[in-house]
Length: 179
Image (cartoon, rainbow, N blue to C red; front, side):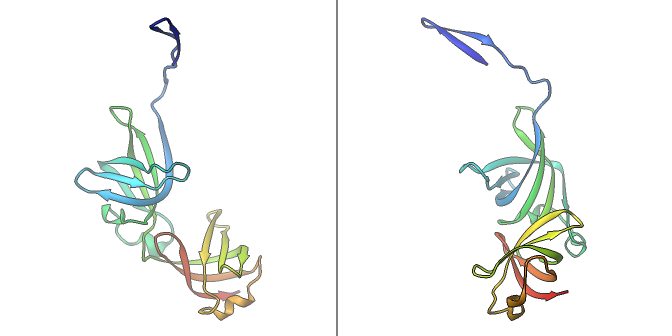
């Protein structure tokens, strides 16, 4: 709404009416989940204020990704602090976003096997970015060259198989083999 002040009176110059209720998708880490209020709090990428979304009783919660991860049962127990989620939301009765589906992408302590190409490599910080052509996504995986001496031979573009644990803030390599 655009307004103008005329003395002590406020008049509307224009009013924007939504033709469709807001909806969208958001991906980030879980900061907390309150089962009593069913409120899911996610870290915000841009703002310092976390994003809070109510989770309806009928909200679909599914695990997505690798078979080893998705074969485990999903549910509200996956809303652990640090879990990586993708939330689809729609507008609720009061116009507030309400989670309509939550995809669990990783939970702290989960193990993943990446068989990907190295898109970027920083040996000094022990960090790599792996590109998976199957899902067209990139994954940042940290590693300790002292614990994985074979990592010293890695080069950008190499194809490797890497086992990594998700620690709630990052993937950390526990084993690797260069193809």
